[in-house]
Image 1 (cartoon, rainbow, N blue to C red):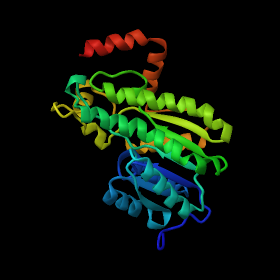
Image 2 (cartoon, rainbow, N blue to C red):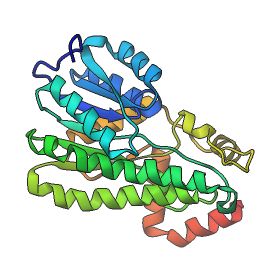
Image 3 (tube, helix red, strand yellow):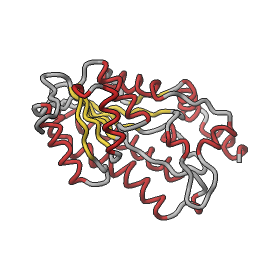
Image 4 (spheres, rainbow, N blue to C red):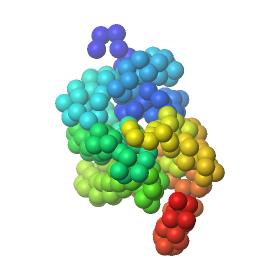
Length: 267
């Protein structure tokens, strides 16, 4: 780690998928708040650009494919070396989507979403637990989606993975309380990130097409980063990004059949 920046007593946040989108916006926000940031991503050129954006002295670039537990161990060990073993915050942000009818999504489409969105989050929670336990007041933040509130058609597998992240977060909120580690689940509505351009192998339509056709509100990565910041400082379990997402949570809680009918009519 010679020549790599050190935390020097600063609070420390490890963010996956930090080379772009919500992860990059969160990295910028936490660096601006005085955090030392671990920019973890499989996209190394993007991660290096992200480090330049937050200031080279404010973080470190880490190569991480969240699907691989061995890479988690290696990346966290490198981060711990730069932070003196401190980990105030793990943001499990890396995620991927595919859009299309279930029969249009290939086995590779399905496996990739499950491996990154679910297994990657579980790997992160397990791999980081010792460092989180050793840091008083630490917090685990899992980024799910408002797709974890209702099963949206043509996003069936993605929705399933985000329901899983939400359920995992609820369980870990209780489990990790034994160690004084807080847990939060952040659920964004549609956010302007590359994930909107996701499709499926056998479909020409993308999430962006569906958003446009449906007239849906799209929030900014900075909007999401603000809620992640609030989750890092708060005590609640679930946080929604966007007023539209909050409205949908209310509807799914009190009028679930209405949501079902609306989705079927929309098709």
